[in-house]
Length: 302
Image (cartoon, rainbow, N blue to C red):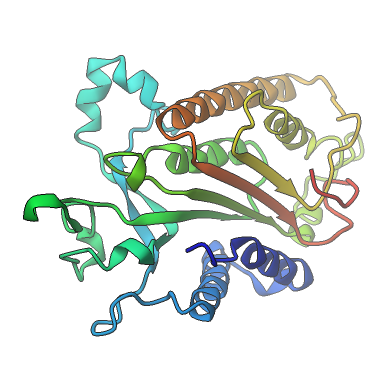
């Protein structure tokens, strides 16, 4: 997998989105396009299939996470630290379903050692994938090494919650030990300009740059300045304004307090993830459809 050029894959997708964003109508369209680019790259290095007889692919969509995931009343995933400290939460977790990565890539260097695979995606979890361990023992094994979460046109307060939940899935240890955990996780967020400009949020008293996007700008600025950035990369095709406008309304104060809460949870989750696996990497990539971005920012990467 050392030859897998994920940076080039993401750049190809970004340029395709920027130049022709109107071809995407739903988030599923985003998934399909990104999946095809990944498939092309895996074919290029002759790593798409690991089994010459059955032609088992290492590339999968909606692939189950190793662990079950618990949401709170607000729809946010509960940090593992809080679950470990609360017996009631641990009991509730046992009744939960597993999550799923939008796209996952198995490690072809290890996948050949899988002794059994399920044909039914709904039951494809760690009980269906086995690793031939020492002394002829067969133990559960999770071969996922790269995982991707994708979103399309997610702005407003929903961006805070969805980014945290996606980040949580990628941060959570995805196996029995660090060797089974994913190497890298990617959050790919794509935002198209035209629907936003015509969505009815333009108001005479609040220009859309300062009203509709001020909370998102505040959230992204907080996210980019998290104290523990080790192995965490945040990339955009714009830079934030030097001064993020603030109207001081009750709604805006509430949204910014929620943004602070989300960033605090994200920092907690990331700190726990690095403690479990110091080598894990997560990349957050946010792209808008034109260089003259809807955010009113200048083009660049931070």
